[in-house]
Image 1: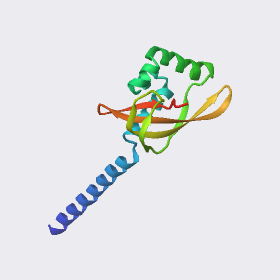
Image 2: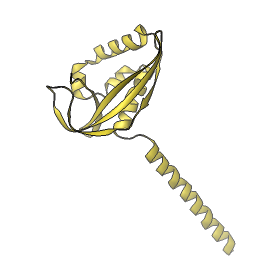
Image 3: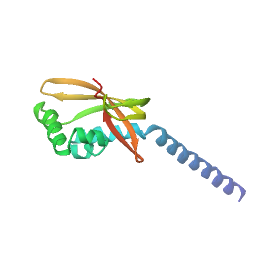
Image 4: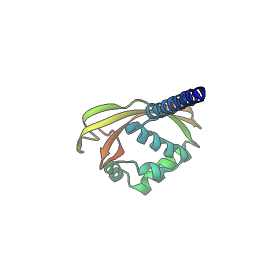
Length: 151
């Protein structure tokens, strides 16, 4: 009787350790916050769901790119003009930036996260990779994307 209880306890400990290990792995392996919103953005873009990617823009980006204009332009340039069906991307580690702004006339954000992205296209012009830094800020509890226009 005693052996059965100790085996049951041992089994419960092993199962608990495995479950805790899986939870920790998922928590630390899956991107969260700034990296997750950038991953979501480019996943939508790769699927051609430009309306969904546009929804992840900060209001300042939505002013710069009205929805219909963004969808048409993005689709035309990448999918039609370059003859790209989809693309692959890699998201780098987010770096915290203090007092960042989108352009010289825009709002200054106390904190923004710079998230590097490499997008690889297989196009009629061959294989090429585009590098872009996305900037992510928290607005009303939601992570939103901006691009750099400080030129």
